[in-house]
Image: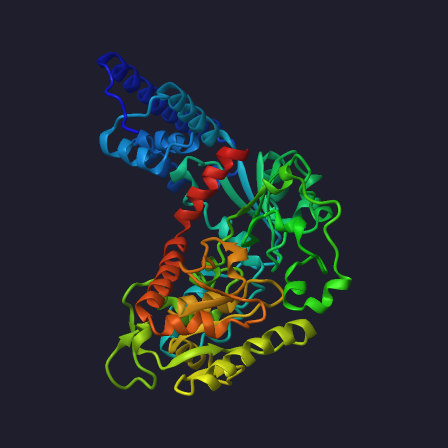
Length: 505
């Protein structure tokens, strides 16, 4: 659809409307921030002046806000591209301008608060710098500082890290606080939207009248049982997951064991003990579920809450064409992400077999399937099972020599090795990947992953053709890695979150 030519009168009205949008921003900034200061502590916040300046930059470019309104009203990508190129708006001009003004007004006034549970302790900048500057990509260890924390904490920490970025997308009143801090009760009471973990919701419901965006911390792609935080509660406006079942209706259709679907999928013998969800989630409840928790945050920010210090070895993966010194430090530098054609291990599963009986059987099937393929094709070089390495650096060095990495399920469908494999340049082979989605979606079959059966029975049939067509396999590996690089930038999450808040809050 092409955009119509606009009359001088219409063009004038558009200019005045855009100018009024700019004025709304300017008045809001100066009156709300510099005089009223809706957050009682904001004058004391060292980051406040930065956020104010970021919003001042935003007001100088009204097209950012208008573009956001176009997105809200479902304009196609082609139309949006034409609008940005020509400056001409679609036919529903007045509706879009009204939405832009509303977005500006709501975005600058809405008080959004991220509440962390307090289990992640503050790390002095001196300690962070000490660990982060170690030359770990070359094999040295970050030692003595206890940087490891439970990975679940990284899910909410990713939203706390957006404080500097939300103003750029029209949400300047965005703050974060730890639940155990002195200023938390006041900030929680004043908030209009609270972003927090599912475990924190029952406590916070009693302390605030805010709406809630719930961040699920469960490993499973299944939606957590309703009675945990109340997905049907009207004050719960969104539920965010790192990995989700696709389509969402599978939360009602599939058998459930211990609150999770994948146990029955990997071990059909458990079916007699399983059940359907009762009562089922309503369509309205499932519409609250969004995949918007970036697992990659923990790998990109290993010294942050939820990170692991050994992820520092993966830091070069986020820089295209990064090089590192070879093992032992002798010789010329080599690419951190080597092309698949230059890797010696064709198929690998590197991992343990865990104590959980069903998971042990599932992972044993993965190893057995790899060995079966190798027995039929003796020229293949494979690793099937746990291969002990002396150091973490050696493990990642081994992983960076693998073409196809088979990553079975764990206590959830996702596994940390999914991301370690992609960030090492491997093609991710995932059981039933077509039934999963993530943020970004590294499980899209044929695009960012290879999907195989839950029992790995089709592993050879699926992977062998790709081994014979490495350019196609390389495109899959490059696509997945490119997505993780892109979504590792907090501005991407800020934009998605801003759009979500405009939609649901």
